Length: 217
Image (tube, rainbow, N blue to C red; front, side, top):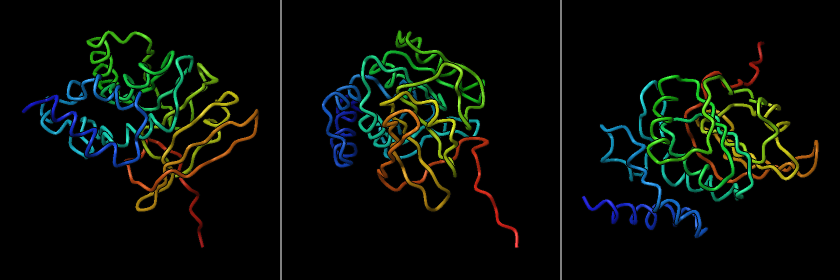
C-alpha cells in the first residue's frame, strides 16, 4: 500500500467533500501520520471512513469528523484547549499542533498511557494528559479558549460553557441515538453564548455523560 497516496486520497475523497477546505487543516492531516495512532490490528483501516476500535469500549472518530472539528474551532496559536477523551492521542496531536497547550482528560488509564506514548514518539510536548471523569466538565485548568468533547452527551452540562473565556469555542455532539447534532458554542461575552447547529451525526457517548430526565407517568 502506498501510504502517502492513500493519505492523499483520504483528504481528497473523504475530507474535502465534507466541506473541509481550510488549507492549514488539510496540510496538517497530510503531515500528522494517522496510521501511527491506530492500534496495530487496525492499521490497514487508518484512512477508511469509519470509527476504529481502540479497545476498552472506546473508538477513534472517522477522519472527516476530526477534520471538521478542527476547521469549525478555528484554533489559534495562543489557544488553551481542553479535550475530553484522549483516545489514542491523534486528535490531541492535531489540537496541540494548532494551539498553545492542550489539557486532555481520559477516563481509561490504559488509553492515557497509549496517548502518552504516541505523543512522545511525535515529540509533541505542549500537552498535559490527565486521568479523570470530565463528562460533566473540567474546570481544573480553566477557563479555556477551546473545548472539544470527543464523545456525545445527551445534554451538554453547563460547566462546559462556564469554562469558556469570552470568544471561546466549544464543539460537542448532543443528543441520543438516533438523533444527535454536532454543535459549535461560542462565548460571545461573559455569561452570553451563541449556538450553531453544524450537522447531524451519531457517535458513542462519553462514559457517565449527563442523561436527560425521564418522565414517570
